[in-house]
Length: 172
Image (tube, rainbow, N blue to C red; front, side):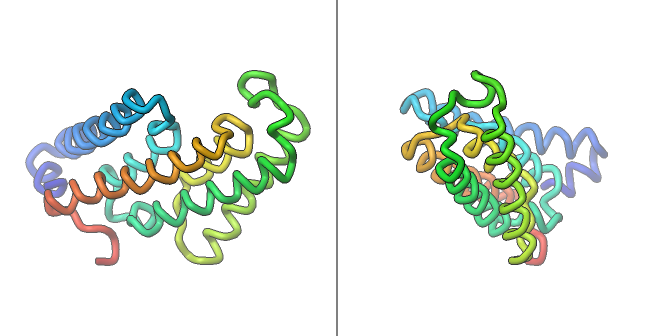
């Protein structure tokens, strides 16, 4: 469908395809957040869904890259959140960045980058996921669990829609 939209309408068609599917998938997660009062919608899902629908041919947009990428980012963020005792401070956007925030944030992105490069599964939006956690923006075990569930749900919804509409992941 993406290829047909691009052929029929050029960049406008491709943009409409990506915009419509982004709207639907993120709205589903947002609705879950409204119903549960939990963070089913957070910033790094935006670039992930854009990769799914704007650039599905890129390796970084493959489902495995998204799942592993955000999983590694979440784990690195949790390690740095607790390792640098970020829970003792207000979240960076509220209380400002401390030296601890700086160290936790930089270390979490470095660790995420190292692991994803080593396993050969790049997914740049995972850099945002790790910062969201390591800077204390989302900081409870319940938040971490919902973040993981949201990534799985977004990947299933996004790639389910792509496959249903005839778009295949890179390398398939």
